[in-house]
Image (tube, rainbow, N blue to C red; front, side, top):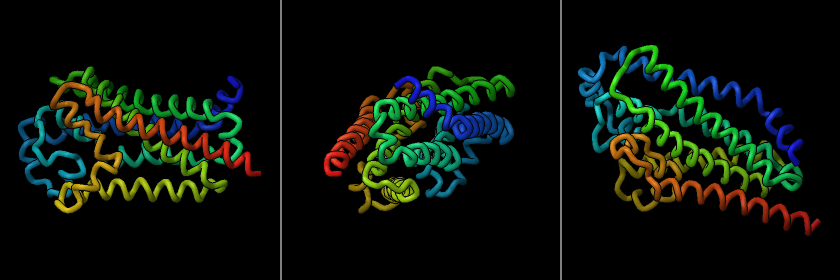
Length: 252
């Protein structure tokens, strides 16, 4: 079983390494943009000029913290960051089809957990390196550890969805397409619910609703309820995938 786990990790080493490096780079660049824009004195005016749609994407309609910490926290919701993490998780779980999961469901889940944790640590390291290179002050790395805990839970929830979809089809390409569609619809629902009141009732159905790095920075605390929801989605999804595969095996 251990050998199967390591084969799984080795199989995704290139993809995981590339995505980790990408998130590290994005995090470093984000820190540099704070200084490049002129620091806190300019950030407030910059955010005031943002359209409501962009504020909704960042979950910042209630206002921005214009210090370095608030700026960096909000930027963990920018599309490149969300797309990179989501794409990796979707690609990883879409490959977990048919007997691949049947022969090692627990190990596949463990490999997914390790992969997501690696991405979260890479992003955290990028933020730290960026702060060291730029000399930006007023940022608590403890807060960003909490943010990465929510990032892990968010990515794991998508992984649970992907595992369940993969269990329903033996076609990896089809599983990837369906999972991607589900995630895109969830993002659109979350975005629309912040701009259009009738859509607010649907917002709790989207995992993006429970991922709000800016609120973590403002409260300086882990949003336990949100993390619990995201982890539940991930656990239920992977558990349901195991059940589905068992039933498929019995009917063969």
